[in-house]
Length: 323
Image (tube, rainbow, N blue to C red; front, side, top):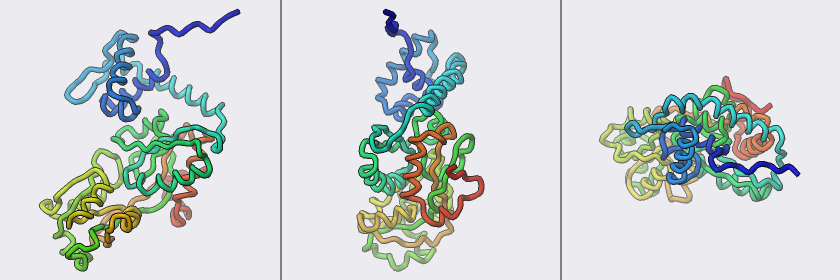
């Protein structure tokens, strides 16, 4: 009777190829480990296996980056082609039933989106799909399009105007901004006046490096508020709100989040007397999973839970809709 040959220890698995693909995108062991949800020692061990298999260092440290060798660059497209083919097989032949599925979905979203959306999403999943798990990923979005393509992220939710090639988009809502301060702020009544507002101390949420459209609002705040009045910069909206709760600082947040935190943190919401750009919050996915049943189902659920009437009336020019 014929048997399947045993796998040799020096053979590579799809996971090894995925590690190589992510390292080519991130050029950093730390970032790649975060994306892959691995420890750095585990990632280093896999890289050592890849180096041994291909007889090449593949990546060399140049400053703070891991730069690929010519051999690694040569392997990039063949490895991506293999990974695409395997994912296509899964999409074409694996059925999906939310009531029995044990699947895990990964979302890329900033902390504002996570705190607003995940509690309601998890509550709905408990009713409709109790076996499904979700993972929120929040890291450098420079290669978000690659993450969507290779399946490390199923959906990206937010405002990412630089995502273009092969990325589909469905509008959920249009977001504006609100300023939060503690309810007993000594100058609360004056904060609606522009001069008084910019004279306050501010904690600024920075979106530098995230690829998120909040960067436009960040630049507008920096232009209006004197630099000496920006006393703190943080990467998290929730952190900014907590600082405002325990000081006299002002934090400018997406209005939806500001209203949600108002009750929980004892904050007051003020309309900032500044010219701040709004942003369209959308869900984004790669074209390769557009017809994949599981991805279709989670997109439909997100749209059902979070799309607002003004968004459903029509997407902005260039946006994709389901179909």
